[in-house]
Length: 455
Image (cartoon, rainbow, N blue to C red; front, top):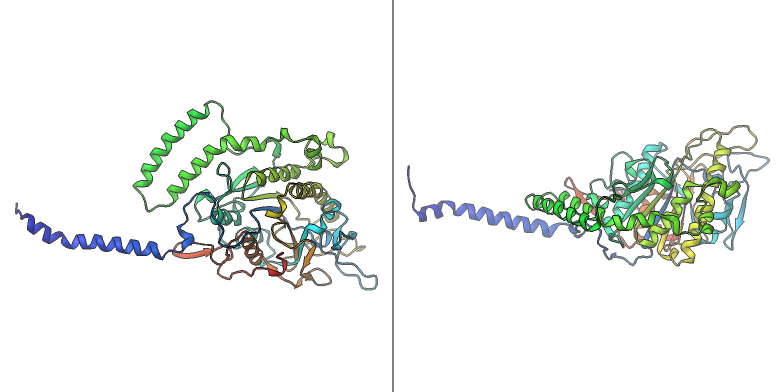
């Protein structure tokens, strides 16, 4: 075997040292050139917003299936000499603002002076799945992070013992998915596919066979193994996110069950939200949606950043009149109670309440005997309340038949951009690099902040 001297060994290997130094320099340069937002650690630590924030929390009241705008908040009166599709129920003006609200929503109508109604909404497609996905993620064809995940990614959570994003009564993972964002920013689903929310739990939270101290020691052992695994694979950021998610799961064991227990709410409060047995509430009936609204108030008080509620289905191709009336009855009192409580507790100013669905409906022609509607993505209604938007205000309008937005048009991307700005985030700077590309909630097309509705 040929031997070499120590001097010869150093001479031959010196190029390797140079290569190592170059690799380190490249890594440092690459890290320095990453966008600042991409350097955020994958945790829910509260982060100061870069812009002045008008809202801290979002409550999204999702009406899946497409609520009929002309039977709720977009009044299109009929004329006897030229009947055309329009509103098929009575409307009245409410409050000092004189906003038109349907007779089907008498309790929400009492809050007309707190509403900011957007009658010029439009979307790219009239297909449920694609438009629902676009509403939640900004894209209609590919799975991407939900807007609740983007919000918690940018701002973190006010309460480190609870998720930053909770999705109630959800049926589709796309509603709460974090997509390519770290999993700690994913929504926590609570109640799925319309199950009774009174028995809903956050999966794997409970378990009384171990004391809290024993659970802590068990988690510490698992996390020690996880961190060793992470340290050996520093190029995979998903590992840190999983570690953070496990820590959050442990902390939730003491906070989440208490929030889900409504036994400390008064009988009067439960009645206002229509939570309880049908026999106890008489002709008004019970409402699973009411339980969602009450939980949303409790989660907002506890510092959850983004809360989504789901009510459906508003997909009324037949029996439109009766089904619309039933749906409105189910949401009317609970939403009014939620707005009441947020206002009385001083939370409405910093809580942005958003109401709407993936699109709207064509109008009916009264007296023609038809009782079915289709899809309308060219013109429909959303409304917002609190959180820095104008109150008692109507923005945009549809044409005389309510079929198309003709002024003050607002796309989902514009709605997303506006909500992010109200939370103190630049919609065009909140980005994440994935597969070599920078992604945003408002996509490559971008969105326009709807300045006209900002207070």
